[in-house]
Length: 127
Image (cartoon, rainbow, N blue to C red; front, side, top):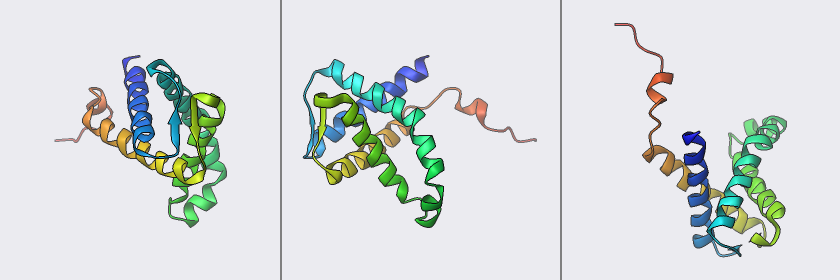
């Protein structure tokens, strides 16, 4: 349960960074609405993104994975569409750069916050 809450907080921080750094992404609410946006974004990434990745597998292979940036952009735009006036994005390019910043910030935070069960998942070497 704690892992889910940490991932949720990481998403919220990453989205906040994108809102602050990218002109064209606007947040019209409070910290609680930012947590709601992070929850919706996490659900979209957990439920819809895998389906889109499977359906676009030929494009992902053809572009050597670069199409993932477009998928991330579409997931952010879908989040903005679902949340309505709470999160607004003015076009494709702000969504693209916002998705890039969210990916970078969440990746860095995931590296900094180690999972204590990560060592249990690694295969042990025979000595």
